[in-house]
Length: 223
Image (tube, rainbow, N blue to C red; front, side, top):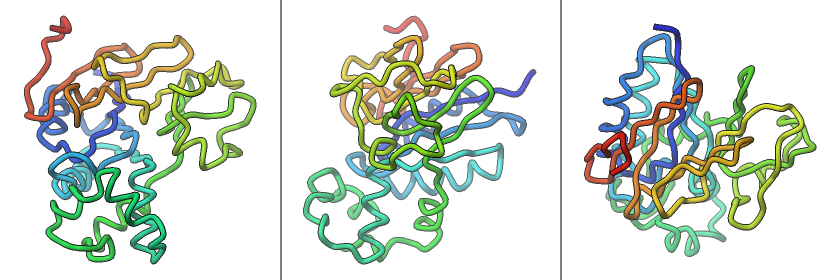
């Protein structure tokens, strides 16, 4: 089987969904798994999610991207307390509960190091991957960090990127549970922490696997 590139949408601490969707996709050692960020917050098991991502990195090529929720936690762990209340309201309270601690500084060093090692973007010959959005005229290395992490498609559609590559995005939750396909871009944040699904997409052939937060797989026909 040729090597695949599997993109994983925003997980938000929904480890049961992550385990089920990736078990169905069955990544092999030669495959690349690109996780689009937001491993933590909102869902019940941020700790378990990062534990699993660290373990997954030993079984295939894992390319973890940084999400805006992950960025906020790192800022707090680094001593920037100005956004602590906002972070709690964005789902940080669920993250602290999963670690049974009161502050991001108390998270295991291995987990903070995993988040510190996340990238802002990743690109292949035909695709590029970012958490939030992009400026179509700028090369990826020149993209503003705020756009990559925070821009949402509900406010601005970016248009085709100058590279001609297809963008694979997260961040903008699709409340209907369906992948948003713009042709030049696909958003695979399908609202797993709500009433949607976690999506794993084979970007080369379009096959996808979805699981809900309880770990139930979605029928491939979309029912």
